[in-house]
Image 1 (cartoon, rainbow, N blue to C red):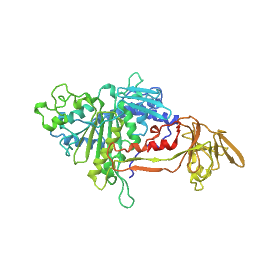
Image 2: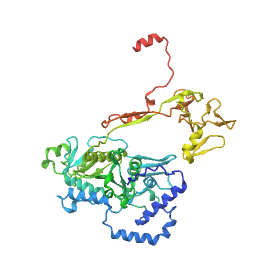
Image 3: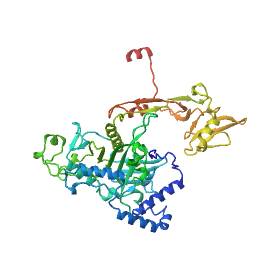
Image 4: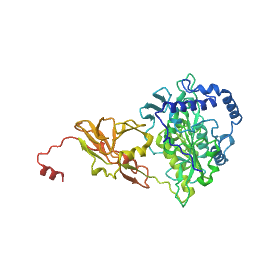
Length: 521
């Protein structure tokens, strides 16, 4: 049974009807939880289904303590891991959450539907032409003192801070009791009464890819929880790892598909408010009663008002050999959300064996060239005889073919597909070709991208210094630059970054070329 992972590839983000259906679906889920809805759209079905929804809420009330299978496995681990603590100290996963079981829900609930910006205590979000821009309060990371591991499980490396079990238990319990302002769902923020709720997401990242004829794909399960104001983080992670549906539905229960499950479960909880927790309140010892390691790791206090980790963001995880890992992230830096899932994959990989979660990176690099004033199809395109008719056949209804013999992308109308004999003249500011024996032309604009049947891309660009316009060509086949098995800070992302900001553009004058070159040497 293939694991569900929806990346929204087939989602038509520009369709008002599609968005209207999503808003109505979100309203339906909010109403089923007894929460305020967005009242300006998507409420028509609610009145019709009112009695059915009331019935659903009553059943949920009777099953208030029920957890979906993935959550039940995580809760069982917490109960056993913290069994040496009093029962009242053991945290419990929330059973009432807004489950983001459809790709795109996280992005839609991150802003009021009729607003173009929204601000919360930890985030500013803006609706822009190509999607949503999220600007978290912490958008740069530091690893100094960030990584903490709870005692009582697998050994804690010396470069990590060891957190006593009681502190982990109290931090996790506090993580599920954030201030009301963090629970506000941006989707309903402009309503007279805003919904306040936890969000949850199910992920099934691959741990062992399929090797045909050798073994099947294996994935782990990860549950992600966050106060509603941090919906942007869930939008980010589902765009990378995919949305694996509703954890309450049996078809999404990993345990019912053991041939494709590693047997490992993960849980990530976002809790930005934990940076204000006091060491004393978390059960950490006074300085005089602490061990040397506790003193070194800052897990003891001299002043009763000292904050855990000096009030700075941190990540704290608990894990043992049973195959469950639970992480608290006291930060909304997007990178931590993504990297923690990768850390869970590494944990699963290590327990599974015969696999390795490779810490690597790179980019598919497409070389670009200045074409001057003219583009003429030639041998530089590396053509294998591709034609415009083949483009039409390949892309099908994803493009709109115009009578003049060119096509426009339906999803991105600024992408124009030209026939194989098209030439572009910057001086005439036209693309020219022959269609049915008649010369055709199309005005060339700086906002558009022109694609040759070979995949070669032509755009208009300005010189960085002179600002003169020129045609810029980009090859269809690139070079895969890959940096394998490296550490954090090893330069993985730098491979994909442009070096244009390291190049100085401007006129260069030399009075004596030979003398100047000698001076350089």
